[in-house]
Picture 1 (cartoon, rainbow, N blue to C red):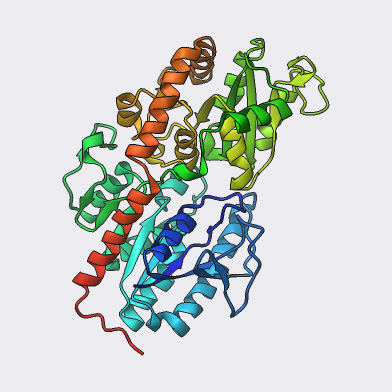
Picture 2: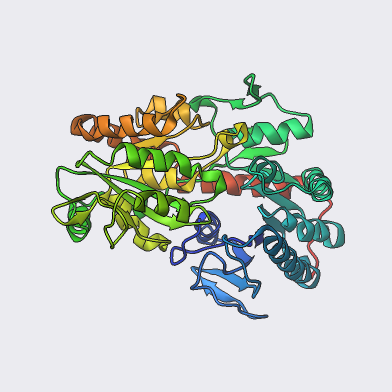
Length: 447
């Protein structure tokens, strides 16, 4: 197959964004397929605008747009960035779209449906619409999209994308249930809150156009190496009797930073607990300010120290290659999202990286992943009224029980290997693409 992948947020392990597209695409290349990627550089500084000529990354050709984008941008600037990138991708499809067998358009942003639709209508090239973020629902739930006209336009574009896509790939069973609901098809079981209910035996799911191919674990990138772990912990002056709690990734409105603040405060007097934060976003300042309010330690703004070493560290946004070292040196992984029902469906990369590293996970809310957390006994889901305190209590309980923590870590690694292996789900993805080409008998590749 000759595949074109449109993804504004593409990143390699040298960047600090999610590597989903990169990891799947290089496996497609390894399987003998050709992959071209049209992307931006907002999540990977190693990618420089290429103009008309691509850069070759692990066998795939990557065309990098000069469109600027940063997660810290305000809403208006983001919209401008989305439209500019959409225009560039549209021009690429108009000029070169006929050479491809299939297009994958990754959303968000939702605007990438436009070049995919034009490729379908102009060149009769089928496309797979990949729903990484359920726009516009998630933007509305997070309070980002408020304008009535933009909401209407977004829902219309979403409906067109679903209608004309040859297949739809989502990142969670909840997303699949939501998409199927909009399509008016499917047999997903739904709970009273409108959330898709599933069990481990039903994964991955394929119904109608929609297929669940979640974010995955690159287990080969997380070797269980005690020496690497010891070296990293020694460099950060962390004792063998201390428990490192790791939070990575975005710190935005949808990430429930208030729960992190409460959990840090609740564990401030427990010398066993060390917090590491690697990431950034518009709410990072709020988290730092809350921590700094406890004391005057200049290095990180926290008075909680032991043997001269700070017990809260902010590393900023790190490339995946460096982030792996923190995962391998940590003891617990924390995942937080706001408490809107929609965020039940999120497929957080930080969770999959955590289980690949063999870390138990503490969630601040219910999640579609809960059946696997129970089956493999590798996580804690907080559901009370004071979630920050509940998270802190779970963390302190696990800090005091190394045996349980180790057992949960082994369960996490098994889950990564047995259910969420990238190699396994890449084969599933290729199966979807193959089915698309088989069903598109009317599509004739043009010279």
